[in-house]
Image (cartoon, rainbow, N blue to C red):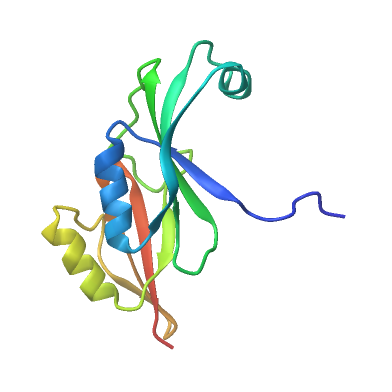
Length: 147
């Protein structure tokens, strides 16, 4: 018997919450609720960092599925990650979305300064897919069903 009821959200820590939010809203996610600060005993206990304070924004896809939590720490200051991390590095490496028109989304992302990690690939006659490097090195996997 599974103890999991549903997949709720994926959390990503970023330095620039405004920039990251704008990027994901540009992809089509919607801000859910209001941006808020979280601090106090609850946060300190859960994340194991005393006297912490973070600002978060929750984003949801149009279909109401799994949400994305963006978090930016006010204290302590965020620890640097590797903005050039590739898919074979340990840890969370990409956030994936199905899109209607892959080329149009890639062009729009490129106009905002976000380029491809590799190239556009096609899996059999089913999927066309690409990785785009978003703000702060976040890899976003974009896939279009073609068959």
